[in-house]
Amino acid sequence: MLEISLSHRLPALDLDVNFTAPEGVTALFGPSGAGKTTVVNAVAGLLRPDRGRIVVNGEVLLDTEAGICLRPHKRRIGYVFQDARLFPHLSVKSNLLYGQRFNKTKTAPEFDRIIDMLGLGALLERRPAALSGGEKSRVALGRAILSNPRMLLMDEPLAALDAARKAEILPYIERLRDEVKLPILYVSHAPAEVARLATSIALIETGRLRGFGPAREILSDPTLAPALGQREAGAVISGRVMEQEADGLARIETAGGPVLLPYPAGQPGQSLRLRIHAGDVTLAVGHPEGLSALNILPVTVAELRPAGPPSVYVRLKMGDEHLLARLTTRSVEALRLTEGMACHAIIKAMSVASEDVG
Amino acid sequence: MSWLSPSDWQAVVLSLKVAGWATLLSLPPGLFVAYALARWRFPGRSLVNGLVHLPLILPPVVTGYLLLIGFAPNGVIGAALAKIGVTVAFSWRGAALAAGIMAFPLMVRAIRLAIEAVDPKLEQAASTLGASRIASFATITLPLILPGILAGSITAFAKAMGEFGATITFVSNIPGQTQTLPLAIYSQLQVPGGEADAARLVVISVTLALGALLVSEWLARRIAARIAGHN
Image (cartoon, rainbow over all chains, first blue to last red; front, side, top):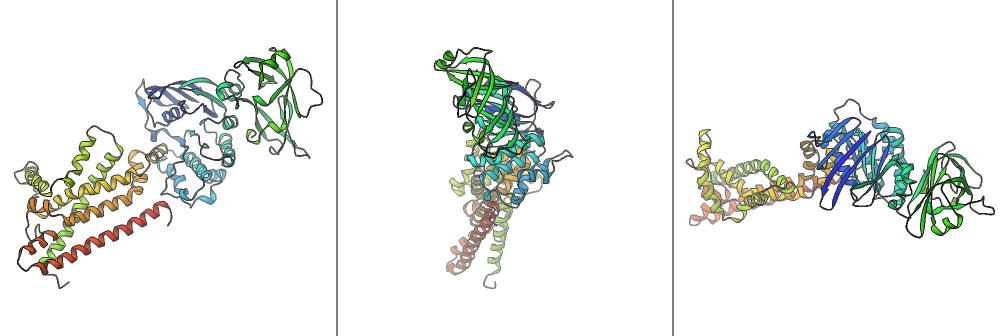
């Protein structure tokens, strides 16, 4: 449990946010300059807010009213910076063990297990100057975890990496979320990352909280979709890999029935998340015939939300999950869509990018 | 070194002792002042910066005069020191003090530049890993500025070896007490036909200065290479 309540005035920003995050990865999502890093720095103790209260798992780190403000080194908050910030004069191994010099608790994360999990074994004797960008990110991640923190802060840890390196690191962060079970506050302005990692999402705009809730709800909320970016809006549904078919398609079981993807998506039985862009969803009132699209899912219209003259966001209920579609106002009127109406959502297999599956 | 007369030898040893102490004693305050100037924003910062650099721009004889006023047995600081049995005026300790103060700006400058080259974000990172301010300074900043500290110390040492004006004004020119190399050279030049005697000391002066420079360059390269990880 992470309780954050902050109010702070900066020259360019008036920050005032307030939320309580459950276990798992909480994504702080919003455009640059929205105040995400300010929130994270306040949690780490690198910035002292004008007013606020921060409680992690029952431990009060900051309470300006009670005059409590723990110094950063007393907070036990692991911080993975965007620029890694490895110590240039120390080997990778000494960097990784740096936090343990100050670890006063008896327990420490198992070094070998973390090294294994992050694939750092071959790098231990190297200096940071001799590492690639992706390797630096992994070392920074390992260093933060091995300092035995009560939670992790990650400030756009992937922003400085190219797409291939991102794809290399994301699975490690997922394993961290699922295996180490540390609460994580994850700053990002990349919807694809947030969709893959987040348990909860705090949507921040110009210093204010626009929305907060479970990732699925926030991503499929038509009122918040414009804030996520018109091109980027899209819901996340969970699935389970059923089988890899002979023609190269992967069959994924979802709340709306099987979905086919045009590439291997994992081992049978593996759980994953699919992000479906709102612009990639087509609606049909009757069951369409003679269509090349492979995925036709039965849904009900849950909410229609006009988003400016030409377009409407439609939230679609599919079992206990939601899809989001972005249609023109003209189509909505032609189909006479109303809330509660049953219809079919059509998703081309080819439109689901591999970076949106994981 | 039989070609050195006992009094020459005395001047060399005294110079090394004076410059050594001057460097050693100005290092801790030099480090502190350099850190404060590089990292802290406080009222009076420009004033401190100006004071530190004062010996560099004042005529050395003025610095020597001010030291004389302050540290003479009846001066403000001199009287206080006399109570605890320390005399500075007209002793090698005074020469070390004068040399240290004259060398101080060079020391602070070199260390300050080195500190400014270290990203303060590294200390922030150390603090999130559990390091207190002192611990993060000792384990991160200090190793990274070692070449700067070394460069500052050697420049300060060389400056202290060559200090003339403030020394002769403050502690006079007493053979065996305060007569360092430059003062000995000066004295010999006052004697008609003393140029040949002075030449020996000049050679030693040049050798010591060059030697110090070469050693510092070599050490700084080694340390920089170790820090960058190319050992």
